[in-house]
Amino acid sequence: MKGLVCFEFGPIDTLAIGDLPDPVPGPGEVVIDVHAAGVNFPDVLIVQGRYQFRPERPFAPGGEVAGVISAIGPGVEGFEAGDRVAAVTLWGGFAEKAVAKASQTLKLPASIDDVVASGLFLTYATAIHALKDRAVIQPSETLLVLGAAGGVGLAAVEIGVALGATVIAAASSEEKLELARRHGATHTINYGQEDLRARLKELTGGRGVDVVFDPVGGDLAEPALRSIAWEGRFLVVGFAAGEIPKLPLNLVLLKGCQVVGVFWGSFAERTPERNRANLAQLIAWYEAGQIRPHVANAYPLEDAVLALREVQERRVQGKLVVTVGGG
Ligand SMILES: NC(=O)c1ccc[n+]([C@@H]2O[C@H](COP(=O)([O-])OP(=O)(O)OC[C@H]3O[C@@H](n4cnc5c(N)ncnc54)[C@H](OP(=O)(O)O)[C@@H]3O)[C@@H](O)[C@H]2O)c1
Image (cartoon, rainbow, N blue to C red; front, side, top):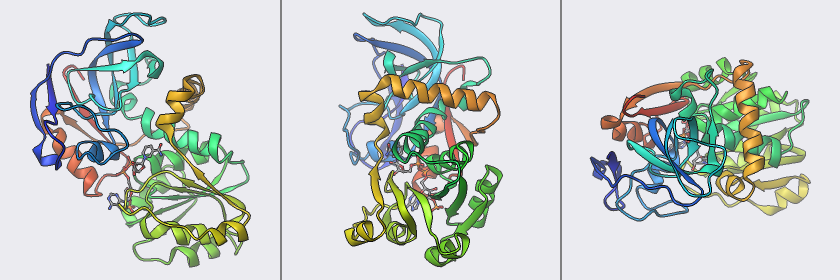
């Protein structure tokens, strides 16, 4: 089958369209004819060998897909060939066929098309897990989202609003903030130009924010933590800026706050039934019009490297998707 192949870990420019063996489903697995695959920041790290796991080479990147089941492994119940599904694959999605665990696969209602579905699960599932399960955010609370126009950031904006919070979106450009406003943010901060702490103090009347959602890290984490309210929760989601921040623990003591780790992949692996409940909630919100995933662009498989470059160079707003075959 055709795929975007990573022969050896390295820069994304070393990826090339090539042949890979057709995947065979193992116990508990399904094979999906891929129609569309979501592009995520971790894809860029995985092909460089800089992520939490390192696939055997050669492999195709691509952590989430939508398509149709074409083969079922031993022991799989509840799915059959021909089912329209979305699944988390971790890698392998930028190819004509991908293998996924049945436990990480969900049937799709007709209301969601392949392009939207392929970009819905990873980012939105991370954001709902972070805000609902980890922060236990309450309707009256304020939520600061850093990198608010990125994949997980924009998902956090929408889910924060769906859960009744007042959302303050922070990002590096006016264009990105406008997108966050269109997706429900009440207030915005341009951290490329404005002082994050001063603006948060102003916006919250000195009280601070209840929940910080941080997929960026770097220099933003500490000022965000300094701006947290009493008993606030600081969600450690990712380090898109490249630098893993070191936080002064005296701040955690003084603010009576919590620094809370978010590792959605491990959550979905350890407690698949809780993850599926979250995915069902996302689909219900989608059907009710409460979340509207922003797909900025869809690239054919042949141009998948261009999509990865857009992500690496910080240019994406919302999601990019790669379309494959019939997608
Ligand atoms: N914990 C989990 O379970 C989990 C799950 C999924 C993803 N993640 C992590 O979350 C982070 C964001 O993922 P994503 O898919 O949302 O990425 P994305 O769409 O590329 O968004 C990342 C955002 O970070 C900001 N940023 C700041 N410095 C950057 C830099 N040097 N390069 C790129 N972006 C930079 C950008 O916003 P501004 O330009 O506005 O600053 C960008 O919009 C990644 O670190 C990813 O690994 C974690």
